[in-house]
Length: 441
Image (cartoon, rainbow, N blue to C red; front, top):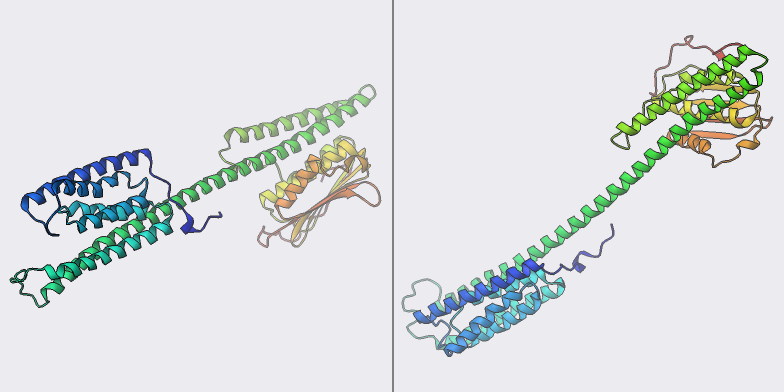
């Protein structure tokens, strides 16, 4: 995910509900500030010196607190207004200081938390804090000459009274303004992180949706490949057998019956495998749910027998010491052989079919050759050849499919085996199996 630099992120403005809340908060603070003003006048606690007229006191109290009604809508502008009015009110010795100071704290915090341009808001807040301390220094410089001689008659501490008063004022303002700056910065960082988490969550949801789409597509391809293998093979065998039955029906009733029996068996097998695939479609809960195994290398002999019944002179040879293959490899080898035999029956016009299974040191190989014509099988985009390549590639194997130099067609697939793919049978338990037109392997 590519993002803009973190400092360039701009916090979105407040919602309508947040703006309504600010309206009520501003009105409430203004009302409390007016109450505080009334109490200050009632007690005569004019800490900043002789106050201005009552109407002017009212004006400064409202002017410094009422802008909080728009604090999140225009945070930077409100900070400037509140800071300027706050200093002006103190310069005029306005007696209300409690809620006015709180309004300045709130405006300073809001500019840090909600400023659209965080860099600008940061510079402005630091400028306001520096200005407040400069104003504090001016205030102390002006007021120090007006301190009554008896103002500190009761002082008993080790620190000079004037110095103690100055340090106390600096510490209180430092903590107040420092906390306002810190909390505003923290709120902005928290909002930015929340935005990043939402963005990452959205990217994750999008990635998961894409992964699900890829999984569904992969499942469709896998099921389409299985259906193609099942339907193409058995329908091809039935077509060849039906043609043979038609040719010999009047001359040789026994051969016709055998052909019809083969058609019946192929039809039943096709229906069983189609039912198996439909069952997978009904019950599968995820793209990783695999259909039950349709068969492995142990059923390659059945393919050869069907080809033989269809009229080909078919042979099967098994070479090497057989090993227990992983189920997926065994099924892939069976399907590749099935597709190769189907192509021979459908397209080749062949008389001879030779199927060989070789168990080598680090791989198992299936080799299907015939003596038919190659012209009808040169489409490299055919579904059968694509399906074979997909099966072989899924197991990091190699596939060769093409015409032979001496005529006919060859399909040879090699599947690599892990060192622990299976346990070899003891020597002598396996033998070379060769089947011809007179028997089965």
